[in-house]
Image 1: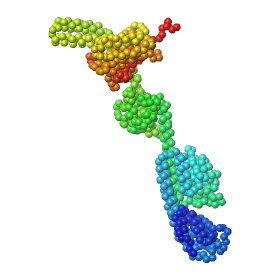
Image 2 (image 1 turned 120 degrees about the horizontal axis):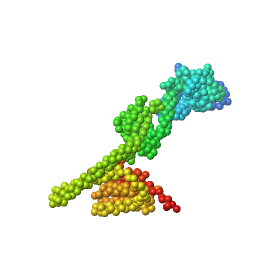
Image 3 (image 1 turned 120 degrees about the vertical axis):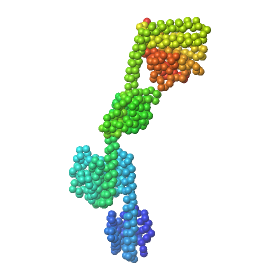
Image 4 (image 1 turned 135 degrees about the horizontal axis):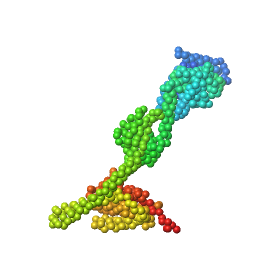
Length: 639
């Protein structure tokens, strides 16, 4: 009667651990021996234990067989209540076969265990690269390690800032209540590992001379503790614990191979702690830099060494012409329109590390085409443990424009003084030249060359006279008291005159007047000059175009009166829009304008508290907008 060999092979192929297989062997032998009680004790290279099968009440003469090998493995099998015909040699053969199969199961289990350990180290390495939060990193690692080491508890303790105590940062399993505990560095087993930097393996942790008693570790038995070594030294320790069973029996002890593996995992944990702390420090530095940027009234931006924007404050958004921070983040400074005037942006960003900050002037071109002139300072943030750069801007555009306007006014005042002084001296010879030219033309009217020459002389004299008159109007500061002027009447007068002049050129005038528009307080003659200058510019723009349309309109707007003059011309080119109000700037030919018309308009409008600006017209050309405060109501009209 032989034991069913096929059944043993089947159990061996499916068993994951030697103990599971030995339990199956007991059951198979008990069944084979007609339900006899089977008791089996085994001792392996890394595992020992005892298993039973069959009814405990069976009695009879026991049969015992043993097996052992040179590597220290030993198995003892006893059958109680076996049938009389059972062969002892058959039982011995069965035990030897089972022992060989158990060795195979053990080796397969060890290989699988090694594979799981290696896979966990690879997975842990990948996990660390993600730089998770420290608590999440420690909890995930300890739970996985506790499962792999077949332990019931695990913990990590890190040094406190005072350097004299350890705090249990994370604890799982049976050590759960250990979390938050403070351990003395010089009076605890974990503290000894941190002080010496040497890993510890213990068969009974509570028997260690410097054991630290805590309710969650009072039943601790076998334990492994490994130091957490970083580039800054040993910062803490990690431990795994196996607890005594319910009967108080000690747990299986850890092997040296287990300690080697645990030490490797502890090195990964230490790297994760160091990385997590570095990330936390970097985030704290970034938050400090962000708070500094956000609180600054000056335009500021945090960028990396390539100019990529990480943060901008509201003042900087206004300089860049961007509405939301989201639209600026992730873009480079040059894509936001910033360009230095002296060196390349790349050289500027590579410079300020621990060296002196860079100072210079930059130009910021906004998406709408407006340009802002800024003083710029680029500073490294190494003192805040940050690799970012702080770009601070000081927008000087308005200041420089005021300076330019002051210079222009001084120039105009000088021009006015000169013009006033020489106007009569210039006008008298101009009048004499014109008169002589006309007399010569009448005397030699049959001579074509003389007629052409005198005509040219008259044309140039008239042009010179217009320039002198424009200069006088520009510089003149009339002492006449402002009066209530109705813009609608000025527009009607100008349109009536210009329509007759331009009728042969097929220029269409369109007029839309707000009859409820109140009067404004101004000098009628100067305000009329504004309407004429704007209309004349529009005429020049539409001349020779089809359709040729000029539209003038007025509108009452909350205490203001708006005058709009627009045309169907080509519009004002983008590059020159910021210069159109500059004195002597013109896009017309030398025979068509002096470059003072819009300057006069701006001066007249500003002196009565108004404003003038340029927009694009729906007609396709330029659209000049003038807003002037409405005149206050007369006392006798309030009733």
